[in-house]
Image (cartoon, rainbow, N blue to C red; front, side, top):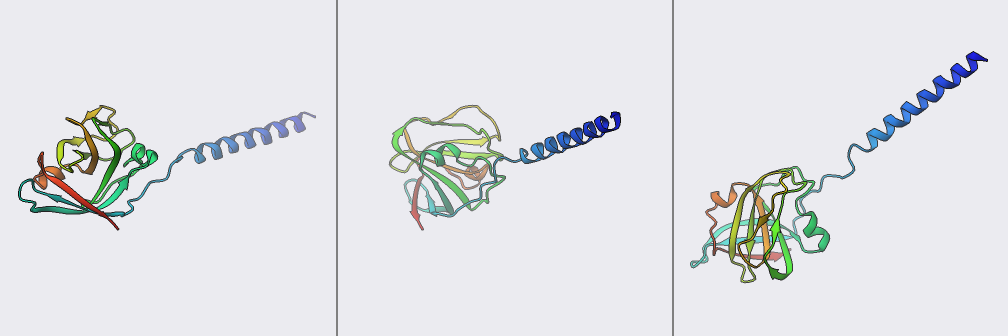
Length: 163
């Protein structure tokens, strides 16, 4: 009788630990990495002269889910890629870096498509609020350092087209 109880205990323990192992491994990644989807092109232009600064491939975030998720759960973005957030209402807004794995520059843009301000070098996973300096309707996110590399300034403009 002791052998049967001992055998049942061993089998039960083995099944229990196997179940825990499978449960833990299935919980490792509850989200898949999101990849860039080109939905258009965006031109950055110098204020006053309209001279072209840069053209980038564009992914657009305009639904509530897209604007709340943004670049979260991505490992990186190419330097020729950007995400444009489009909001229905022009107002002061703040962004933060929760669940964003790489540093970016956040460019706040008004309804006239002019840069209002740039939050440079926003750090991964930082929950600090990064506000616009005034009412904005658009936000452009690019890799950290590109706003300096491209010489972007307050007043520069954007134009974009959907593909």
